[in-house]
Structure formats: structure tokens, C-alpha cells
Length: 83
Image 1: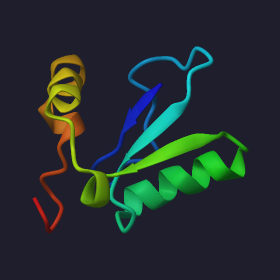
Image 2 (image 1 turned 90 degrees about the horizontal axis):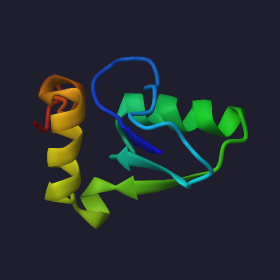
Image 3 (image 1 turned 90 degrees about the vertical axis):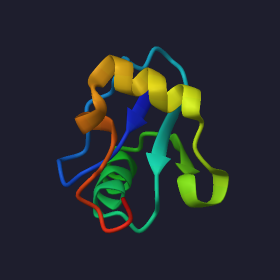
Image 4 (image 1 turned 135 degrees about the vertical axis):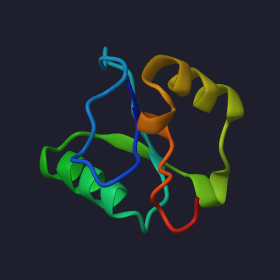
């Protein structure tokens, strides 16, 4: 499933239900929301792959698809200091 994370919300619900696929958590490691999401997944023994935007970059097509599905305000954290 895809789990974009932004803002100061509780760990997010997936945009797409996990159907036996690998979970990928996208974000930056020092973000408080990302930390909460990783802790939540770890505490429940849920395996995931972490995609670090600072090290691995961002896929413009994926971001555009997320914005189309959930809206810009759910995908883009404009409150952060690095926006």
C-alpha cells in the first residue's frame, strides 16, 4: 500500500488497502509525523520499506497521482520549515 505522510496528523490511513503488497512509507526521517508512523508500524510488527526523499528523491508521477487521489493539502506539508 502507499502511505504518504505529511503534517502533524496521527499516522495516516492508507490511500490504497494493502493487499499483500509491500508497504512503502515516504518522507524524511527527522519529520515528527514520519517518526510517529514508523513507531506505529514497528510496534505492530508491520514490515515496511522507508523511502527517504532527501536521499532518494521524489517521483513526480507518484506525487501527482497522490494529489489527484487525495488532494494537495493531504499530500504536501506546507506547514513544515522546509516547504
